[in-house]
Length: 242
Image (cartoon, rainbow, N blue to C red; front, side):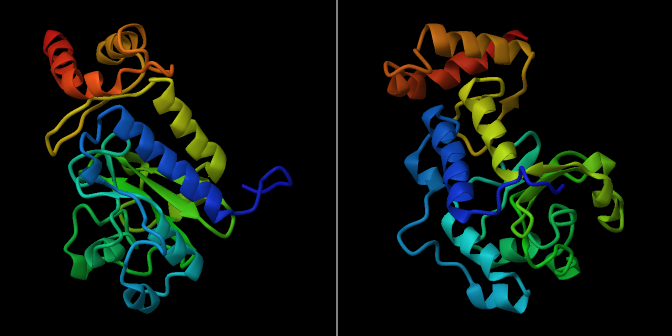
C-alpha cells in the first residue's frame, strides 16, 4: 500500500492511539483494575533489549515495544475477537512475537524467529490454533496487515502479499471509534477471561443501549464507577437470556 496520501511512520501517533484503546477499555471496565493495564513509565518498559538485538529487531520496533501499554491478562482477555495482545516485557513474548502465526501452538524452541521482518512488530496473535487474527505493524511503510488465521498458509506468510494493507493510524483510529461508539462491546469482568460481542449481536445492542441511556456513556456524566460495580452482573444477565 503506497501513495502520497499516506503519512510516514510516527511513533508518537501510534503510541497515543494504542494507549487510547487501552484507556477506553479500562473506562468500560473490560480491564477492571488499574493494575491490569501497565502503561509505560518514563523511559519506557524494561524489556530485554539484548534479546531484541540478538533477534535483529529494528531499533524503531524496540522503541515502540517499550512505550505501548500492556496487560498481564492478555493471554485470556482478547484484545480483538479471538486475538490477544503480546506482552513484550517477557522474553518469551519477544520470541513469540517474531512468529505470531505459530506462537499460540508451538513450543518456543520451534518458533521461526526470523519470520517477521526486522522492522515489523506483531501487536496481536490468535488465541487458538484455528481462530483469530494477527495484527502486524510495519514501521517502515506505516501500514498494518490484519492476518486472518483461517486464511493463512500453513508454512509461511507468502499469502500476505495478497492481504490488504491498512494505513496504520487509520486502522487504529477505526478500532478506537469502534470501541468508543460501542459497535463492539467488551463485557466488564473481574475474572481472568474476557468476552467481546460484535455489532449486531443481541448482547451488543442491549449493552450499548444501557450504557448510553442508563449510564451516560459518551457524556461527561458517564457513571463510570457505577458501571464498574454493576456492569458485569448486567452483562451476564443479558448473555444468559440469549
